[in-house]
Amino acid sequence: MIRLENGLTASVAKELGISPQQIYNWRRQFSRLSDKQFNSINGVDYSKKESEEVRRLKRDLASVRIDQ
Image (cartoon, rainbow, N blue to C red; front, top):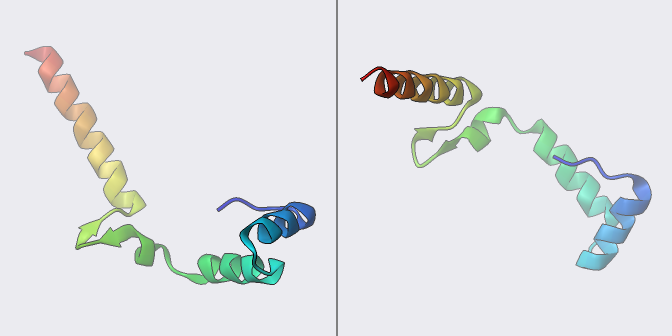
């Protein structure tokens, strides 16, 4: 999540027609949520551990394709 400085937060809030406090509330709520809540969509695990394994498997597959 991008951290906004006070002036920028206020200008973004004004542009969106909301209170700057609402942005601070959203930021606080977002930071409190566990990673797991954002890493599983429709039963698919998008966690860091899962992503690392997928990247490793893709590298392995690419290596095998080169060797053939």
